[in-house]
Image 1 (cartoon, helix red, strand yellow):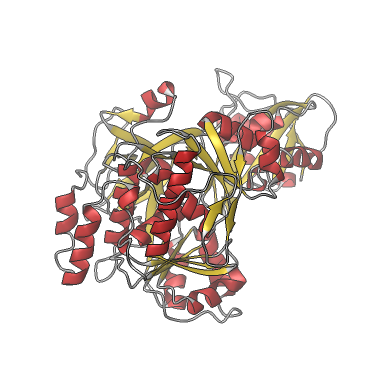
Image 2 (spheres, rainbow, N blue to C red):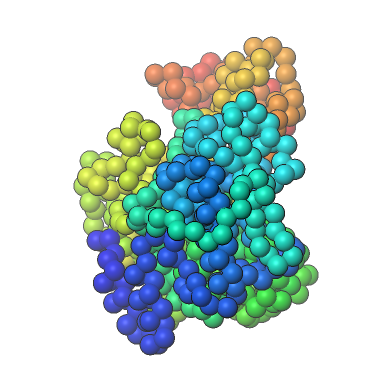
Amino acid sequence: MEPATLERLLADVTSMEPAVIGEVRQMTERLSLAELLADPGSTAPAIVTTSPLAVVSYKTLADQIERLSGQFSNAGLKAGDCVGIVLPNSLEFLVIFLALTRTRLVAAPLNPAYKPGELCFFIKNAGAKAVVAEGGSAAVREATAGLGVPVWTPHVDVRGVVGLLELPQASRTTVDAPNPDDIAFLAYTSGTTGRPKCVPLTHANMVWSARNIATHYALTSADRSLVVMPLFHGHGLIGSTLSTLASGGCVIVPSRFSASAFWGQFREHRATWYSAVPTIHQVLLARADSDGAPSSGPRFIRSCSAALAPTILTSLEHRFGAPVLEAYGMTEAAHQVASNPLPPLLHKPGTVGPGDGISIIDETGKHLAANAPGEVVVRGPNVMRGYRNDPDANASAFIDGWFRTGDTGAIDGDGYLTLLGHTKELINRGGEKISPGEVEAVLLQHPAVAEAAAFGVPDPKYGEEIWGAVVLRSAADPQELQAFCGTRLADFKVPKLIYVISAMPKNATGKIQRRDLAAFLKAPPRQINPAVVLEKSGASASPKNQITKGV
């Protein structure tokens, strides 16, 4: 299937109302994030924050972006310089992000839950010239100590105007417009062998993806998106937010997801849709009756970043009276790659829908016919050109211009993609991708640990949960190891269970077989005979291997 073109994008919406067609035409003419906003002069609301309550119009947002871009220019930053953003979901995040990209700077949003060591790695790796963070963030202060990187604290006044008091004030000034090929966003995606890889996304990547999402879901100025995913992820930033701003709609931005407050916020601010990972959908479904959730109201519900069980999808549709559209996204493709369509077109539970620029290949790189399983590859104007400063990763990530996703799947006769599994060993915990190698590296820092392995196991709430196994050289218990990890890793990366074993399963070359560990450790410890399991798997291990502890 060939990548979409602007002509095809317009052809797809010829059945829409004239006003909607006009909005889509305007979207297709935008080439950079500086041109993202549907109508910079409109007094219609663009952003609503819930805590504290603030309503910012498109005109006010555009004015703030221009003013802050002048401040960034006067601060001595030049085109291509990177600035880190360590902020929760907020008005400040969005204004800072859009002002940075307007100034031809590169934004590197980071998870505020990261520990100082993690933040320090990302700030150094990105080459950040400054970091924008909350004033009370001790982790950011510790991470930047000794790096010579200034930390700027945003402030919001009672009118909802964002400012950076550390920078010289500037009125509206002339700033060169970004080029479509300028890098706008540094995102980090986990690798299976160690630290996350850096994904540079251009203005063109992000704008194309945002307008593609807006078109696919027929978003208009009448739509309001309740943002529940983190803005430092493509799901929250591009999937829920930039797509809405490109369509002239309004984004409702709580500082964090609260299941108990969700439906109250949805009603109060007249939201029409939301997008989330399956874990959040399941939480909302389980609480629906006790929270007095409506039986109708959303125009649609979107699910992405992890597989949604067909039974959960059906239950969501029945309970909330709205179509649930499962999508497929990844950082390297500026989020959305495929999605089930809106009614009256068919949406198929268990699939992630159709998408342009998707194919299936076999182990030799041959493109396969419909219904044949193989590796999912993608290409198109939303796909990155390559990982930053990582030629080895790029050599294996692309084949004949196609990006290798590492996922296995099949495309049916209608063009709908079904995902069948992962060829990579990333752990997908509720949409958070966790590198086993990163967790193992932390476990190996403990003086008592001789060998370590981290791996994912099925989990009814998160899809996958992270577990660990260690071989010890001196005494240590699992609780101690968890606490050790907790001081060096974000909470969601800390293994829920850590087993102490006497030897690791390895292949003929000595590589630890994480999947073999997952296969025999996911049963309750007292029911496992590791010697038998390891022997059946063909792994190298002594018959005397035993699990000695688990927590």
